[in-house]
Length: 556
Image 1 (tube, rainbow, N blue to C red):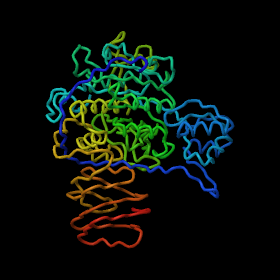
Image 2 (image 1 turned 45 degrees about the horizontal axis):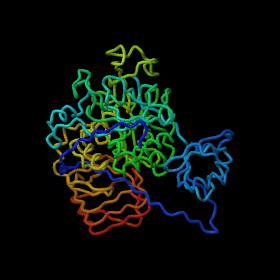
Image 3 (image 1 turned 60 degrees about the vertical axis):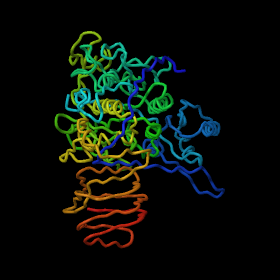
Image 4 (image 1 turned 60 degrees about the horizontal axis):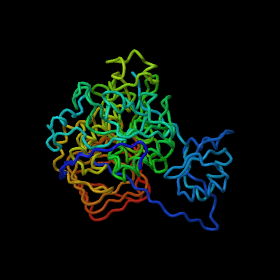
């Protein structure tokens, strides 16, 4: 039984066959894990470390540090006994140890330890300083492929600072609350961020109607309050991991279909090792749609552009990573891709994130800091404007609830593809700033030709793609036919026009199978380095299986 749980009302929806037309394809890499084995004459070993722990080892740091170690209960117990460690927190995927620099060094050389991660501090993605999303069309039934939808029967887990359930617009929206910062807590929101996020997703209109100009994106969805952030706006990675695993375990009991993660930590390692990202991957494979904010690190305080500022878990290819719009363009502070370590194309799309008015908590840290921003007060009917990719992610989570209300059989991958393919591409922003483009559910009608994707395998469908090169810019246009399975390591996004600039490095193994046809003339300029010699002239036809291995370097 769940503590403090309340009944969940499920809505029966008719089975729908999904036929879409795709303009963007995203395929997530799957890491292969091998069983642990060490030969008697094995050489020196060093575990993969997050950059913060690597800094601790390289410095003269003399204090203790929290580390997250992944593994079975048996493995954790062995390590605890071997190094006489106290387990600070037990996770479904491992544990948190508090260790000295010396023990950290010893752990990193233990053959049973593959990766070590810092218990990173996560922050809400809010920048204190509505647009068209297609929600009104979904509410009215104007999107015929979805029908009239308001998010009924769809549970959204808000992993944040808590939710003020007594706010009139949120009454009866929260079916269960769990506090991972304090086992005795009730998920109360002392910071104010989680309540604002909850309102964007599923607040009821304050004129007692379900949907309206002052309601959330999916006002009939139900919320699950998973508190991981304290009154100062920060929390620990371990609590976020525990909340995600909790949502996975109780997803059917609570009717959870969506996880909203409007928070992030510095990207200190690959998504393949990052413990929050590994939890996101588990959620994705369990059938949960994970929506994450990209972060607010797109520019320095003095206005200089910053690239690769996307935070964890937004760096995961298994998350729908959302940047923020300000007016008609991407907000300059919205984090830009590619991801720092893995060089994945992010964000996946952008949504309204500037001066979003939503539910507030009177007496919370944020309201106390900016009391002049309260509107429609006093009392529990207070509202508050906030800006940030946190707000943009909440908009997308609400959109996902609407989509699942009309298409309950969609997998997480199908949801991501549907949102990206229906987004309005922003050529001036490009993929690394605006992703597939602006969220717009009203374009869902244009997806009538896409067959249903199944599982985690990626399948290629007819899509735009004749390649020409001029002045270092590669543009894909017209038609290319890809058949059967195509596997890419990491993430590739195909939209109408894709522009690659400067040096691009492709690593690991890329497998293309069956027939790939490139038509017309393809011209490659500047220096291109391939393993062995390849000559590109006029019409090129590639047939059957082609395997490219090792590193392929494309240079400007």
